Image 1: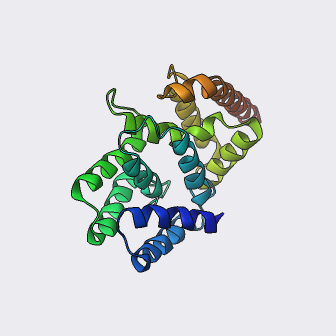
Image 2: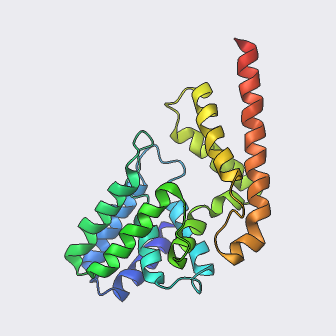
Length: 219
């Protein structure tokens, strides 16, 4: 997987005029960041999946290069104890790409797209935001076994949170997602995957409610 991703990164970097030695240095930084211990979901598997979904949506995008760059960098800084991961990831992208000659206007777009992944709320008139958010949240409409593995991985990333507190926090996240209608922002994702999202979220929520009840009975 990492070899294929490395090739994918190099293809994008070379299109941007980034030479091979610099592309290799950026790749090593990305691989090291996404390979940090404690990353059970926010790792290179997530980046690969998001990029693959984005490719299915590229006709929607107005600046697909910006979308791809933003996906590569959007979780490069990730600490579940912090609330500024997206801002830090955007700053990382700036620090890495600006010295390599990536244009200021492209970097500004990339920053905005990365920051949009903090709230997952889209501007009504920006198809590039629609694409990156749908790609980032595509895991929520995965087949049940894949979704369940995702949910377990998220729990592992928050292993420092006691179970009762995690149930409360995760329930709030799921309820916020369930309130979205439609869920996805692009027509292709809505038509093919909205139903699966609601089924997955509802199933996890029911499991959390069951766990909360069991915890209450043990007290």
